[in-house]
Image (cartoon, rainbow, N blue to C red; front, side):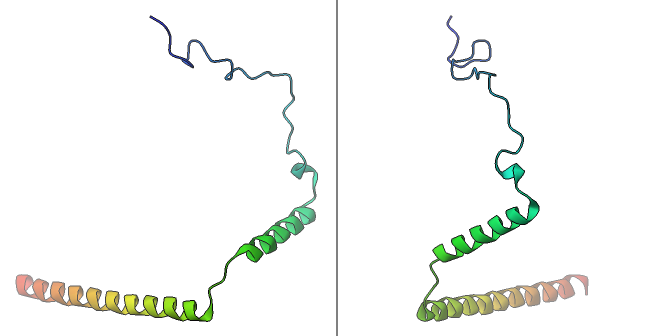
Length: 94
């Protein structure tokens, strides 16, 4: 029988990594000080926030209304279930 490609016994040529390169510890980022890393982090946050597509006032009003209505419905549902369970417990346990 033949071995499957990439089996444990016979690794593929891709699996064999040459060990000629030394592994760098930290790379370029590891050499920066904590303040430079903090500044880089802040710049990246600002860059990401500029990519955000903010909703219009109309969309925001619509989304807020939908959320409030959903929450009110869920409050009513939980209240009804709680009321039913409390009456069932009173009936069963006296």
